[in-house]
Each structure stands twice: as structure tokens, then as C-alpha cells.
Image 1 (tube, one colour):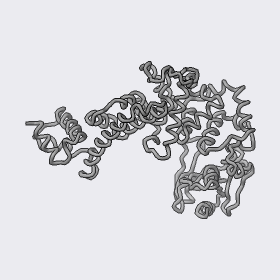
Image 2: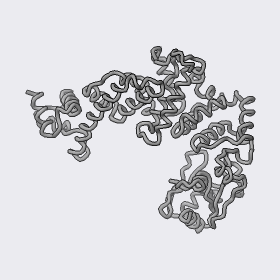
Image 3: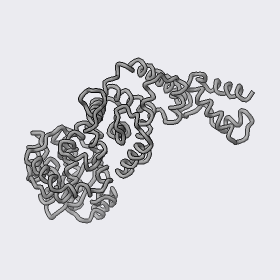
Image 4: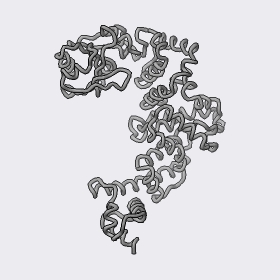
Length: 430
């Protein structure tokens, strides 16, 4: 805490009053080290504070301009106080656990019992004020995101107030812009996707942001298990959630989105009725949610190709996949295939095939990575210019074909050094 207070004192030397607020105080109370310090400053002119500090710049792109910079080795973001006092500022914050402030002398301002709620692992609307929801209904999704990520319970009165609001305001929920839904959904599924979507289901919210997923609750899985296709989607999200803390591939936005959206637009568990229309629907959702185009392409590739991993794949085929989809993309798709097999209960059937495929992919990746080790980070032993010089060629399509062929030779183990690459090229031109 001492370093944070030193930051406050440094800023107050400019004549502005400042407090630690929001996620910073909540994380400190929970024993977590914040990466960025969040501050509230009583000055309306953040530019003048930046000038007085001699560091930082004002980012005016969001709903609330923020002064961002670094003081005493600590990265910070500072917002102007909303209201004339810190208490008024805290009233505007969504949840009690975020409505806590700390002064430069170490004193705590906690008018709504946020520290008590943190200790009791409870999510509560600030001041039990349902008008916060009325002012912005999407705060409901943010509340569930916090509850899922922090593994807290919703306070009974907050839960009751939210349910009553939803009963009479479905039209308002339907009219929330898709990109706002998307921001909260993506944040919600990054850490605890199963718990988050389960909580959205409990509050009957899925119908508002992903109706086609909600509809799958009434579609039997066709395996006489008593489960619906929707149940299997939740199982996939549960498997993903269990692996998120330890499995790097699962930590990709594309991986989790593929788990959430993989069955949208189809009515069968095995996806045998998948059509281009289903892929277009998934694409439309992610586009409206303002998901980056690169992530959208990764999601669609995972959904389209992951079933291929249930068949034996040669090292040569993996070379093509790695060169087309990158190493990371291919690893993610294979891991997704494993996760679906576990979630849907058929992993044992394909265990040997999946493990062999995993081994083959590791060998291909090891060979490609060896190139970087031998060439100080280059992805190839030879550049296009070097190929032209070696073979006395002019620029053209043939140079690209030779480089592609050399990539395949590296991935399959035929070429494992610069000398071998040069010999391979001379053989091709003979």
C-alpha cells in the first residue's frame, strides 16, 4: 500500500486532491497486485494536472477522459471526480465492491459497505440502488461478469431487483446495441466462461444476445442421454474453464468464442447439418459484437476444421496446416478437438488418434522452431533474394514455389540446416 500512497502524494503536490478507487482498491482488499492504478482526481482539467506532473497524456476516446502515465514506477489512469465529493463519485459506481476509495493518508472511504461485501464474497448494487440498472441495463451483464470471475454470489436483494427489472423491461434489453453486448460477453468468457454463461442463463439473458444458442436448450442431442445440444455447449465451456489457468491454447479469445458459438445455426450435435449459412450467422454475431477480424477468422477456422483431427494426420499435412494457419492456430484447433471430445464423452474412442496427431504436430513445430534457433530468429534458412542468387534466377512465381517447397521440406525433416537447404534447392533446379 505504501507505494500507492506515495503516488497519491506525488500527484497532490500539484494541488489536486486524489484517491485510489475502483478495481485498484478492490484488488488490494482481495490481496491481488493491480497492474495499473486507478485514480479519481478532483480537478476537472486533467490536462493541467498532466502539465503540472510533467508526465502522462490525456486519452479522450472513451466515455470518460483519462490521464494515463507513470509515477514512481507505477502505471496509472486517472479520471476526473464525478460529482463535487468523493462520496458522490462513489455513488455512480455500479457495484459496492468497486465503490471504495483510499486517501493519501491511508484513510478509507467506504460508504456502501464494499469491504464487507468483499470479505463475504457478495456482489451488490451500490447503495442497493436499482436506478443504476434502470440508467444502464447492461450493468446486469457486468454484475454477472464480476460474480463469475471473482466467484462471488449475487446479494439476494440485488438479485431480486434485477429479476423484477427484467420481467418488465425486455424491450429495453433487446434494444441494447450489439457491440455493447459484445464487449461484456468477451470480458465475461475470458476467465470463467462456463460460470458466466450459466449465470446469464439463470437470469434468462441469453435470449437477448445469442438467441440461437438459447434455442438449443430445446434440441435433444440425439444420443438418448436426456441432454440437449445446449447442455453440450455448456459442457464444452466447462472443460475450457477448467483448463484456462494452465493451458495456453485455451487462453485465446478465439478458442473460447469457438466453444460458445460452435453449435450456433445447427440442430445436430455432430454438426452434420452445418452449412455456409451457419458460418455466416456466426460471422455476423462476432462482427456485430465488434470482435477483431483476425479473431473472427480464427474462430471460423477452428469450428470448420477441428473435426479433421479425429482422423490420422500425417506430418506432411500438418506442415501445410502450420504454414496456412500458423503454429499457434493449428495447436489451438487440435486442443479444441480434444476439449470437445472430452466434453461430449467420446475422447476414449479417439484418444490414440488424437495423441498421435499431437505427437506429429510437435515434431513439425520442433523442426520449424529449429530454423529460428539456427538463424537468430528467421523463419527460413534462405530468403528469396538468396534463392535467386544461388540459382541465378530472376524474380518471379518460381521463386515463391521453391520457398514454399523448402518450407515443406523443413517441416517434414528432409532439410534441417542451411547447407541442406541449399543442396535441396540445387536438386530442384537440376
